[in-house]
Image (cartoon, rainbow, N blue to C red; front, side):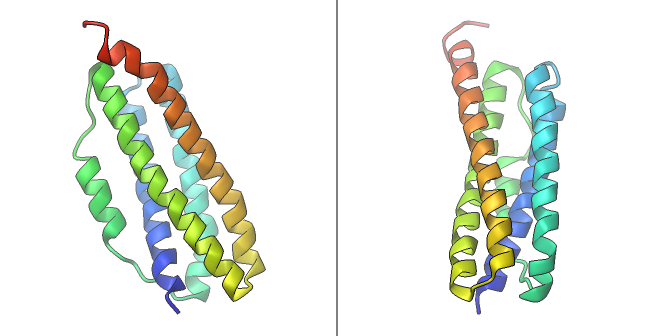
Length: 152
């Protein structure tokens, strides 16, 4: 059963997304909404990772390196200024999108395995990840005109 592989992928991706949200919150503390919401979303990712632990034990989670590679490629350091905020939000979006598709795949496996407990966790966390993606997209739309058109 390869579910263990995807559980490991998802677990690491959630941990890395939490770390990335915290990095962006710290780097852009001059944007109160970004600082506050990134901290809030980091906690949500921590909760997602915690909810996966019983299933990691049940299915003998494997720990693939892909999420760590993606995280290290995207977050070599945060950026400054308006364009920096836009780019950092875009990087968060890419990491959140990875989590989103992993939730989808794990959810399909939960259906196949008839694991109602895992399915309940997937439904909850997948919905919360969708909210993260919506917020990131909205915040990028808000930041884009200032960062890309207005001279600094």
